[in-house]
Image (cartoon, rainbow, N blue to C red; front, side, top):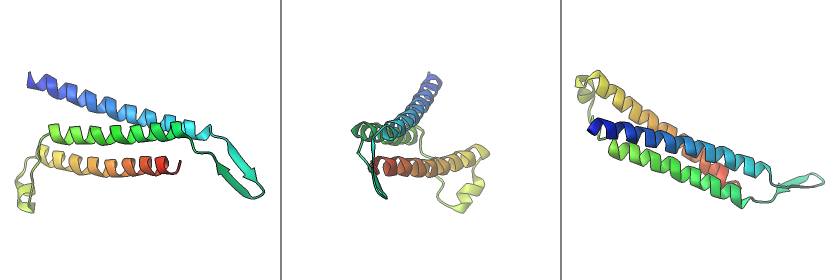
Length: 119
């Protein structure tokens, strides 16, 4: 029974990540639809509240998916180099994946926030 819950949680997190990506793309499209004003060499655009809402929703979904994945995925506790050397290959891969997921979250979240705030 526990295995089926793990698979469903994985699907939920994947769906949340995909939805966040689609919302981010939709926010970019909404931002590009805003009217640009040009006067001599100056150019500016009106802010798009729709793009702001979509970008914020994408950032919240991305953060929520990451938190759910880390809380329900369990703790991979490796405190020292000796623990890492004694750990099984699966546990070492889990630690590497956890570190990589935090890096991806930092990059993706910062890009979404920068795009949302630039609006």
